Length: 122
Image 1 (cartoon, rainbow, N blue to C red):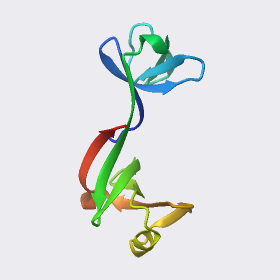
Image 2: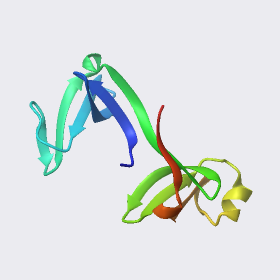
Image 3: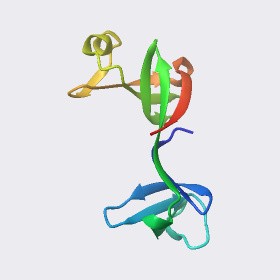
């Protein structure tokens, strides 16, 4: 599973999360859970005070492709959308990456070519 976003620990369980500026944290789960409201099929939410959250961290999935480090920012079937983290434009250009913005380089990579996939907690 490719994860890129906030994870909150609440009552000893980890949930996908979205911290709010209002001192609350929105917790999400794919299945029915006590106290969670259904937003749509497969998506449930509960809003809790930030003071009740045991831990809030950002998780991202990283990998290596063609000898360089990337963050995985998406997936579709047998392809992964990867973003170069090396910060060197000549390397990004040499890899044939698409320039998305100043200093931001991405491409679709075959999942079979991607190695060393791991989650990093920030």
